[in-house]
Length: 130
Image 1 (cartoon, rainbow, N blue to C red):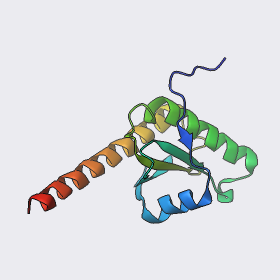
Image 2 (cartoon, rainbow, N blue to C red):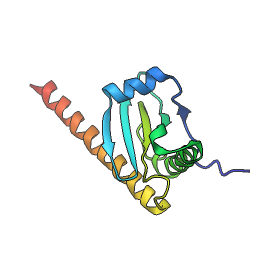
Image 3 (cartoon, rainbow, N blue to C red):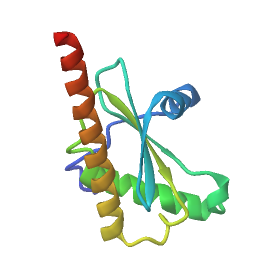
Image 4 (cartoon, helix red, strand yellow):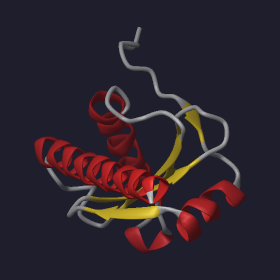
C-alpha cells in the first residue's frame, strides 16, 4: 500500500481552469519546472499538471508528470497556502533531472511564490491605510 502521509489535494481537470491559471496567474520558473499560481474562490488547494507534446512521446510525458506529482506530494503540498490553484508545467529537463535537483527547484518556486504573495499583501495593506 502506498504511503498516504501527504495525499495530493484536489486536481485541476477542466481546461478553463488551466487557461485561467495561464492567463491570470503568476508564473515562477526554475530549471526543472514552471509554476503558475492563481487564487481560486473555492478556498482550497488545487493542483494540475501539464506536459506538452514538445517534450516527447507519451512515455516521456508520463514520466515527467509522475516525477512532478511525487515532488509536489512530498515537498510542495505540506507548505503551500490554501485558496490557490497551482499548475505545474514540465520542461525537457524534468525527465532526466535528479530528484534532489527537482526538490530544490520545487523549493525555489515555492519560496518565490510565498515572497511574491507577501509583497502583494504588504502593498494591499499600504493602499488600505492611504
